Image (cartoon, rainbow, N blue to C red; front, side, top):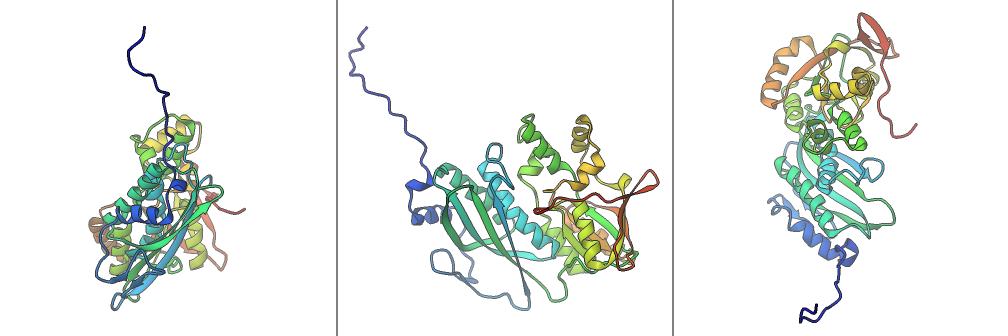
Amino acid sequence: MASGLDSEPLIVRAPATVSSLTERDLIARIQARLPAPPPWMIVGIGDDAAVVEPERNRLEVLSVDALVEGIHFDRAFTPPDAIGHRALAANLSDLAAMGADARLALLSLGLPETFPVADFDALIDGLAALAARHRLHVAGGNLTRSPGPLIVDITVVGTVKRRRALLRGGARAGDELYVSGTIGAAAAGLQMLRASVSSVVEPCVSRYLYPEPRVRLGSILGRTRAATACMDLSDGLADAVRQVADASGVGAIIEAAELPIEPEARRWFESRGADPVHEAMVGGDDYELLVAVRPRSRGRLAAAQRHGGVALTRIGVCTAGDGVPRVSVRRNGALEPMPRGYTHFR
């Protein structure tokens, strides 16, 4: 039956991609999602380089991390805002491990031509939201076309008072080892996402997609000199213990029974027939802090825990290294070799 209306072909428009915009268009979209630059940022986004005024009586702490699609995240199950969040969180966690306060960041993006504009906006929104919570300002960066994966490369600059920076190499035999928060959640969350058995509302999945770097805790540990050494758990607790032991020339014994494994993660690992202790120690992306503390500094550590807003759990002790660090895990009264954490290159 005729409707009396002229029929016209249905036109389905494909979502806009970054290739449909100019570099200036994309930069403008970034600027629109960021707060106004602070007074100390003399020249920000839009010129050949940023110009900032140094903070008086403070040392600068610099770090850079790149997230590459297919290596560090999978767009099939990682929302674009989570990509932006995780990219900045990885850098902020490095500042936390150094006891530094966040100040500014440079953002470099390698964008596939088919990357949707809506995903681009969401990625920046995720990054900007985390930056705002830590009072960090984006000072500039670079945009380029990528022939393959999406690449998010961020450089951060933080500041710390002289002689307050936390290093990996300050631990001594007898120092106690603590870890912040819980471990294993991010590794379990990633496994859940890969198995397509959960959603972003699941606690472990959320911990993987939206990790919280411990910047406030790290800053307090540095200011109060509560810690002798510190490192973040981006590549897992096992890797961090080895790195601190190597840098400090000590050994370490970790108590398996004391590890603060996230309960949901423990249940997940056990349901898969995996060893929760092993999985929680080798799994990365927790972005918690491993801290070495002199026994006499427990009072300072307790104060840092109160003001830092996150629990710290004693998990072991540093031992005499005799020049060759010996790192092990004590389980059921027996010592086992420390498993290897995540490594980017074999």
